[in-house]
Length: 546
Image (cartoon, rainbow, N blue to C red; front, side):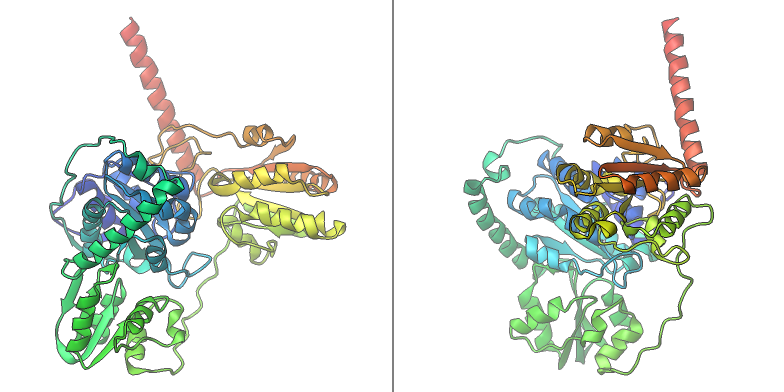
């Protein structure tokens, strides 16, 4: 994203969020890369904002919360499943409240373009008890991001900005407007009873939270994010997010109520809208959340049939919803299936695992593609870091002959994300047959676009940073059988190492290390730039000494 910005630009939703964060005075952006959220922090960093990758989403939200406790504005980004990881923080952060504005971006993925599930994170706002904003295009992504910081400070709550793949990656015109700035500079004010969540403090905090939500619901009745477009009286549509755009195209004569602030709901505004039209349809992508709440409130509204709960909505599908059209939808032409790149260092690993007929407990990353032909060498894949725990569970209960075939496979970024606790379980509760963990280290977070992580030694902007040594960590945690192999240079050695580890009743870790074939040229450039900076610094110090 160019640093030279004009007043009127064509931006993706992700870029619009980044620009708004910069213009709103955000002092820290943190998160974990995950499609479709990744580009937000990358753009924020490119614009000059302080952006950094955290090891996982829980840590990111903790860091953002700490910044907000200090009175600063913080932006935390992740994809929808990342909020599951961060939920432990979120559910108590609504009790503690915040001083500075804290906006959590949840980038949902309806249709599962690149995800393992299709969860609808509107549920999180209701469960955790926090405000939620849902932009429909890039301009609203810009405006709602700014509003999120203001609302967070006004009500003392984290605000979830729920994006979806279509809003994140589609481009539309954004007019860059001046945005409200923080009222004061960062400063820590001690509030022990509000921030130390022992039961005695949490009980009144829960009451404060419900009071805040009640006040926010009153605010929502007439706020700028509750948008009423009055047209015909025959049909009214209540919607939020990208569904607003589809509804406009599908029914240009319909009146529309867009719930930009989708939680808490402006119930009186909704009642007035429903009363103003002859027929009212709730058009929402994902779970039937809005329609269920409105029906429970006694409002005469219609929803969609179950078939439209799955996948993304579009103009044609909205027309079908409005017309109660249950006829067969045209099948989307099959695209080219994903595959590991030619020359990918994961290929010999999965070839070997398939050859040895291993039971492979897999994980999230490029190597998940090992499940596909010609390898067909992955048996489970649940969530980030699950490869270790699932593999251990199999080892504990299977007959010995089968147990000895179980291997856990995890990538380098995923190991940093949530593999360390699985490794602790591996050391603490050792199966009778031992266990084998393969860490596939390709030097980057490849699947989401080659981002950095704590094991690369480079920051979000690819400058020098602290680096975690996988082998040293594994040994420090109590595993002695640790080896490192380049799977492309020594496929035979890899097979021999796996075979030997499977035969032992001990714990073993093999680090299969080879840079990602796509990232390798960039990694060399980054390392060269770091070396040149170090040399320049050394030369400068020498000149000063002279």
